[in-house]
Image 1 (spheres, rainbow, N blue to C red):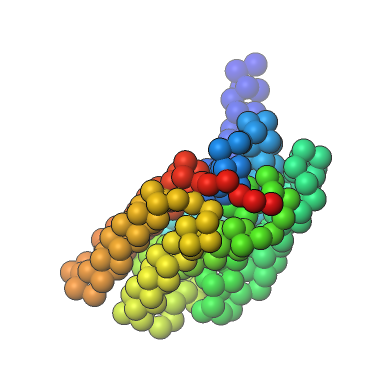
Image 2 (image 1 turned 45 degrees about the horizontal axis):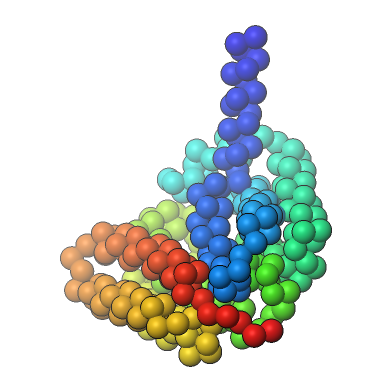
Length: 297
């Protein structure tokens, strides 16, 4: 009996592991930000819970498919060599079926309780992550990060569309913000995980064109992000408090990016950039939630 329980506990852990819970949680912060921004103080708790659950399942499906596709390079990289699919703890067929079920259930939840547009946006994100990015660009082009940023920018738009059922300026600003944010965030990871990416021959910018080039790009993207983030106030979706927070945190991020050119240890600096990118998007998601103004539909 004890063996039976232990074996099934391990199996459950394996199924949870290949969904990459950390990635799901990180995305839910921006989903909630988009949802509360669109709600403008009139959020419906049930719709929020359904939206979070539905998009979590679809993101989880994407992560499962990614684990299947990348199992060959995952075994090369230090941070991924212990993953479930690398060690053969689940078969590809079982994992694929699991991912398919997650995607279908998540889509049905969003379709029934939110709207079709929300489902369409979520599935476009899934398609870009699995097919266009993971299968298409990740191993072949230095522009893979840019393509991947498209799927990474989808979650807040899902939260927004669940409330508004339309793609308007607010949705496009959220998409623009998150797609730009993904770039310095991802380049930072590639710098402090430089050896992993080089060993797996993944053509990220720091590996293919050098860390200095990546630093220049990171500074530019952080500047663009600061401008893009302010657009929510410019277009009347948020108030002064959000604008003040976005400018303050954006300028601090710019300062940190500039300091990278004099960094004695690039990996230490990159970890700081990565950590601050998480703080940035979390703070702005919270601020756009609490400082949203009424949206005229």
